[in-house]
Length: 196
Image (cartoon, rainbow, N blue to C red; front, side):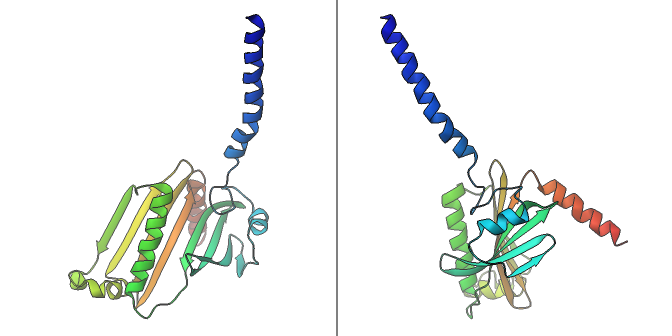
């Protein structure tokens, strides 16, 4: 009986030893893409598969594709720590409603990954085209209509937007580090105060 108890304890101990590496691997998982919040500029550049198309002190931009759509991926840094990632749709559509379809496709993908959004809004600044669904894309391009959805995870806030002005439409997804957001906002305010 005692031998059996010792064998069972040994098996349990062995199982814990093998489980420990996989638990730490789960903790090391990426926050998005192949990056983690707080990574340095150099670490992010190594994680990307292509050369950047633009670099500045606090920003690195890459070209990529998602759902067969051309995007730019912008990484923003505060104190050389990654705090924000933006996917910006660069495809151009002649039918402005196609931008709304792109936005809806992004939202559906985000719902499948993060669940129901904590917030979804349809914002009409001018409701001229509110009842004319065929012109909702035009309304977005004129700045009359904007849509957004937002999600929160343990470490990340995710926003998906569509808005526009002057007949241009912007569709983007923003990922922000919950931990580093306040530092980035403070740094931005300090920069603005320095301009006074």
